[in-house]
Length: 319
Image (cartoon, rainbow, N blue to C red; front, top):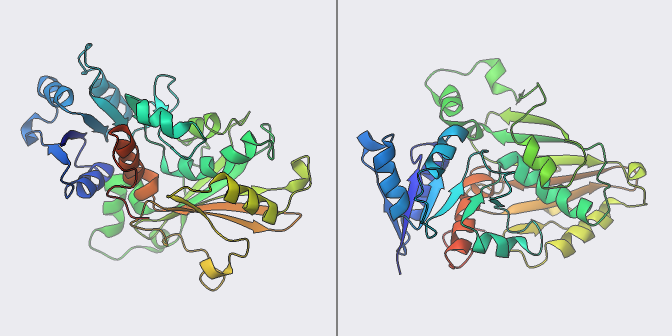
């Protein structure tokens, strides 16, 4: 059986990756809208309503406009939105199948799925289990930082790093951004973890194309119970047991490190996320490493599509 897929925003960073990942699959037929009709609402509506699955790889406002083009009686076409427009919307299912025991089935049955943000994916994989289990209290003063490759900034940022000409020192160094502390992923980071307050989030972009690490420091003295890094690692191992795309690294992380360093690029070109717990009885650092273009974007979207169409969840995805 063949499924018709329409990628609205096919020429953006995420859209291109989805197209690349799906183009070789026999069971997927990609619907291609003529270049000069991409922004024609009437033509776009025809493609949306002809598709089994629509990927929205657009700015927020454009995603909302495309969803509105669905015919009122169309219950067949299913949406996967890679923008931030619907990630906390109650009518949309959050596209992280590993979130909890029931989330995979919710994704499978949903007509509308919001694909998680890359930074948010790592933070939620780390913090949701701990808060749900009561290990971390909901009112914990959480902070997190994330370093990501420049592809996460889209076409303009990619061009600024890759266009001809030597990079200045400022571009060569890691750069903090979103210093107004109002990053667009914060609402989902709070909503999907159950935190009472938004975390203090400081993202960093580096002079490398793709790959990322999201890290969260934890202070056991603020958790209300004695807990060490090895306990957190054991808990994660049980929570994510059996998951194909989330791998909890050993309590001794040395073999997974590069001479004591944690490179952000080790999961590139896969849909794998690796979970680490570093530290001791007094201080803990939990971290998630994955490809910002994989589990942080297009890979996550395709994983959800596979579930929604009743296909093998890992089809077309590297672990």
